[in-house]
Image (tube, rainbow, N blue to C red; front, side):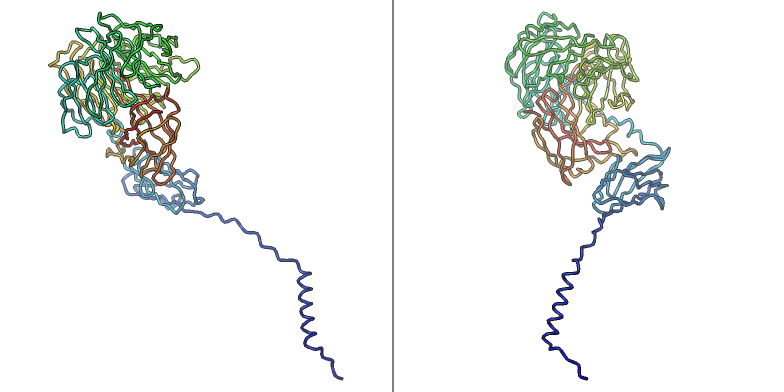
Length: 585
């Protein structure tokens, strides 16, 4: 029997139909679920030698690394974190030990922040023993001899210091090159016991002064740091000896108090624009001797009178002026104490009185009904002291006497004290080489140190027995725990003008370790009161490996126009050398 064979063409067709049938009946395959892969990066903490011990922990959790005599433990010192997460490492020294520094992916002594874009290694170095006295008390540098008694002292936008006393000519000094000595700058007339503050363009406006004894003069002169030249401008309506000058939001200057040509208190305030003056005829207020009242621009745009009178007031400078009462201080007599606005609208008043007091009080003008509140006092009672805002916002108090009387030089206080606004507490720091009481001064320099000068040439101290030195204080924030100088953030470039509410950038190699900074208006100080300094805090965000961004002050009420120092502050609390900038519209 023979089998029947189908033609090859029919066989091929059948195969094609079978395939098509199979394609139609079989559902299309679906793609498998794709698993989400989380990329991890490893952070390793190790010891970096050193004789000390401590613990390093992380946020988010993962690292809890014990370092013993410079060697990291075998467990707890390595962890994985999601790629891109920013990990913050915190160090805690063992009792009796101190933390020296981070290295590898971090530096300095504060918290260490690392971005886990790649695997990272951070080394921590601990030392035995507590911190060096330099790291807790700072250091006074060797005194420099001055040709004059530094009673009136101003930091110029050039970085130089202009100072004068009663005898001799005004002098220029460069703290960045102290060995170059002093350069005489002859003023057009005697500027002793004048008021002074900076105009919005960076020129120094000097108001009033004296002729015979305590008789005031009405003259006004402006010093231009760019040309080192003086220009006599329009005179005030009355002479002023011991006046206070306060810059206003529009850049004009208020002159308040002092004694006139007849040695009587000047009751009517005046406002100058650098060339002419106008009187606030409906704001008469006689402030008795010794004048130089503590006055500040308030957040509401008015001028706040903090003292010497016990009753503090607001002065509205609109129109012909008006006073309103704010609150009485807790301590009635703070004569020749010192006041400072340590944060926008917040004022510390410390010391003063006869006999002197160590007490302190604060007021917050941002509150709806401001009132004075007592805070812990200094270690020493002081009169004839100076209060200086530091680059990080703390306040340094220097000089003064604890003895009764106007200027008791036998009871002078050489130890300086630091006030921390965050804790409202005091710490005693290093002592000056020489005593400074009446007619002393202090101001912040661009390198974040403090210059002190003067004392004498009055207050029953003869000219020849006066203090003809200046001395520089290096604060604790410039030292590592072991007493070596701490590495500082650097400003490689920054804008020259910062506008209100507008963003600005700063270039720095340490962008990853800086999140805050400060603007501090240049100082102009005399007779226990700095008429120009104030501080505005800044928050920075890193927008690139070497770029920081911040926003200018919210208004001219909080930072009036004029010359400022711009400081960067790293995670260890160490400030940069300042960049001189102008704040304005």
